[in-house]
Image: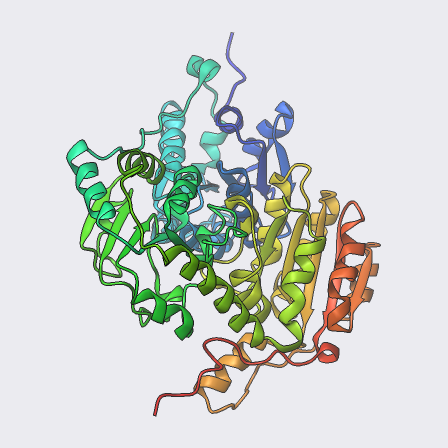
Length: 552
């Protein structure tokens, strides 16, 4: 008796076997067999994005919160091309996203014959933005290719991987692979450094009297060991993407105040005698294109060998998993590290002074972080777009409590926050998701608001509305002598927009009512919207580094 099991069914069953519970995308002529397999099994929730770009960002947001595989399923050609911006962001963020796309029939592929959606070198296009790109070339190698792609996405440094599945192969029948009964992805074990490497690392750390820990995205699983190092006297700072590995209300965790344009912080770095960088690129975005001078004695731990010296030169490099390496380090230095007697208190004072100095630049918006933290649930997801508010208090002084609460455009692309937040909300379970976006970014992908409506997501969307591109205006002030061209926007009335789908709407017109107004929105289960009328509250003032006088 012939099997009715197809490659489309295999794709659906493979995803479920990988623990995927939600997939994002759009139905199309070139992916119907795979979606049919998902729909008939009814074990995976398929969230219908309004565009593949939004769906790719949703898969990314989902991966960041779930700490598992995010999946975007697209059509071929234009559909696959529409995912590119989302996959680039996933690559920036180190998010394990699996992009599965259709393809024209095998006999037409790569021949420029012009069937529907026929792309030119789609595999090359996807490979240029992803960690890797694969094509399934036969029914018998489908499971192997899918497995390799998922493993690569989930192997540090994590990132997006794309797989093409030609439409004729999606319909091809085959015997169901028996290995799917007890399927486990063959992920490589994390590397634990050798004893000599760890001994040398420990010796260098023990010699320090004023040590600083700098954590990035690659250290998100190392919170326990990082907290122990703080107990021993380390100070701590993080990249924006590595935030809350240790809860940010810890007095020795400076969080995202990395020092760009802040002499209070950068001067302190010169008193530090060891900077231990773990799972972090120390990238230009957070160091003013590497103009922040770090401590001279820099030691680096990273799972990726290529990270050694990629940005700042290191005096010693250890290739290893962040959690495994720091756990081994803690056991070696316990009771042996003797920090300077005044260092811990100095670091606590640094945090107090730096936060105060930063907040003091924000004028009427200086209280927004404290107001929101008081009313927002401690476990809520904090998703943001690129706005002046996120560039300032959202990224740097709003305290978070766990790494997977932190969702924002690592590549600083505008318009991504709403879609990232939708994906985050899909993975959040009973937790509330709060999205903060500017009006410019919000209207770039406003259609995806109805994805959140249709999926009954528990989200509060805060739109910081200054009727323009506020971040661009600030950069123009600093680099174009204040000439503000092409940065003002006319946009629909947000209250009327919310009314189209009966979304509860609230407006903030005075700075001191921000927290109370957001609290009213948070109290409602489901999708709500808060508009902050920045023309009423006041123009956002210059902030670090834009508030600094030019040298000379």
